[in-house]
Image (cartoon, rainbow, N blue to C red; front, side, top):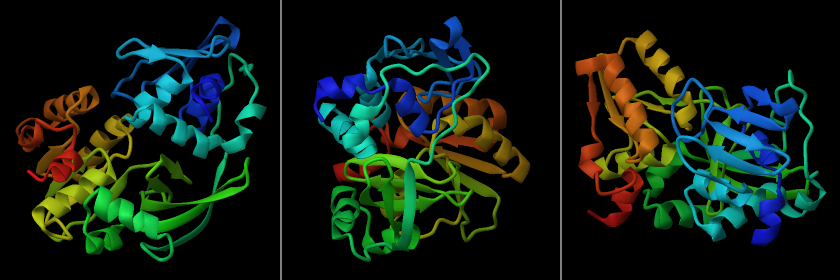
Length: 296
């Protein structure tokens, strides 16, 4: 897939496969409004014109389909093309240029990726072991404790892929390989029970940050429980969960970006002196995994 082909993939199709649904429609369904995946918000600020196939996030940036993938995946052009190639394969050319969405109809996520099998980490795909232990610097014992090797099929192109999987609270999996980041099954937050008294909670945006923090502390289990959002769109759900579980200490290890700042501020406003923001400890880096990779 080249850049010209990538830009022609309908944004609505990309967003749908990523699990995002429009909350409002305008102009007879030609323009759709989404809650932004880049921050916590209650009113939609990301707008997609499905006729022009462009997006505009009023709290961020905008552009074409490839621009969105680059921003969402936090990657470059090469990484964006690899992501789209794995998501669509040769089937991208069959996707319609425009999609008619009735004003009262919300898009539902199709089961494009079908889970074939779940195996222990490192069972057969050795490239995944290299990716996790060498490229991401996570020790094999830590990876084996929390990750699975999952095999899944893109039913549109019939191809089978391998990825590491991190289970969430609904039995689905957050999946990663060197070229792709997505989810299989139900999308949700993940929870890992610590070995302490159960009164403290660590909060992470993604499971790679969770694994990186374990690695930096040279442990395979925290004393505190851990909540991994898997998406900043779960910010309010996370706050509700923390409130209901009545934790006394909430420690945030969020990303050093706009979304991480906004969620950290929300946690501070909600829990006051019970919340501790640890981003200052890696303020020179985007996230904890970057700190780990730096060797500092």
